Amino acid sequence: MTNLNCFGRHRRRTAPQSNGSRNELFAPPLHSRINGWSLPLHSLQLLAWLVYSFMAIVGFGIYVPLLPAPWSFAAYALIGTAFVLHLVTHVAAVTIDPADLSVRRRKDYSSPMPVFDNTKHQHIIHNLHCTLCEVDVGPKAKHCSTCNKCIADFDHHCKWLNNCVGGRNYRFFFITVLSAVIGMILLILVVLFVFIEHYVNPAVLRTAPQFQTVKGNDSWLVFLPAAPLETSSIGLLALAFITVLLALAALLLLCHLLCFHIYLLSQGISTYEYIVRNRQSTNPKEKEQVPPALPSNGATTQSLGPLESPVNCDAPLSSRSCTFKLEDRGQTSGRLPEPICAELEEVNGERHLEYSSESPTQMIAGEPVMSLPVGWNLSGIEKPQAPVRSVEKPAEGRPIVQDPLGSSIMDAAVVHQQLMTEAQTQYLGFKEQMP
Image (tube, rainbow, N blue to C red; front, side, top):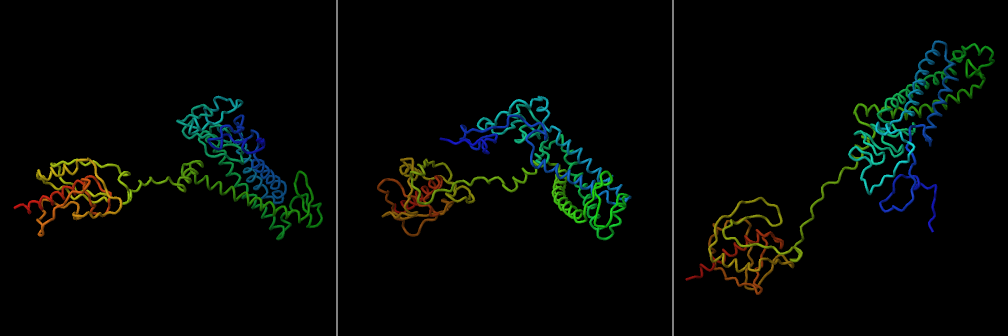
């Protein structure tokens, strides 16, 4: 009996994990997400809003009011502008629907999306047509699996926004990051100023009229001037320490993200294109497959197949290598006499050759083993000083061919050349023995 787990990860994916899991149950998203406010909300999205709220409350409620009169107005203006700009662009980046124009024209996010079937389509978008959205999309559009729709000029899916970043909201996303970096830097400077002046000159931080009623230097007022609340010096410094640490951590992430997108803008590419290029550089395509090696010297005749080499007395002698690619030394011209041609036709009567598989050289009684270099000009062969013994035909009527390079695997043209060389030598020997 099969146990089904309704809360397992396999029920939340949008496609089978393997090709053979057609009968496996899986639950795709019923609808496409409209924007970053569509449920479910991401945990990082909630964390981003919590950090923003904490920095705004601590900065404008505790530390900025403690600054002296000329600096407090500047801090309110600069930090307030950065935080308000961040709030507006953040909300815009989350609210804007980054879908492709063809998807937005349908305005149909209520119908469930089909499941991608990789047995019918190799890619979700093929020839600028999305098989899931069933619309034609732009050249840089990509189908986001999280939002389950095609995004125009897709850059990446931001979990902090819980929305895709594309051509429609990329500017808002970039300004959101930039304003957050500026706001964090200014807030860290203000908190550090308060922390240092608390030990150096606390009177500088007590210029507000509400401090006239406070007795002692260990008591401080927060949330000035609207709702003054008295607190201790230790609480003020501990909160400043926590604020600086949290702001530095956020600033580190934001600066890394900002520098990365500045680099992408300078290169004119998107985050998706950058990731694809890195994958191609780290995992290059496999080189062309090396052709299989030639059979060894012990290969049998049946595995090589019969080699047909018809005799052509008019054809010039070629000098090609059998297994090694050597330079062509040209052609050896010359027409063989008719007796030699007749003998060659008798030798090659069965239209195929046999090769030795036991050893590269076979010794046969009554027959010398001849090995001439390939490309030797037959017309310039001098008569041997010693008489050449007549060669008897083997019992089976098939000549044993010796490869000059010591290999039993030979080319048909080389075999043909050696046969004609052997026949020429036999003809010269017969001519010497004649009275």
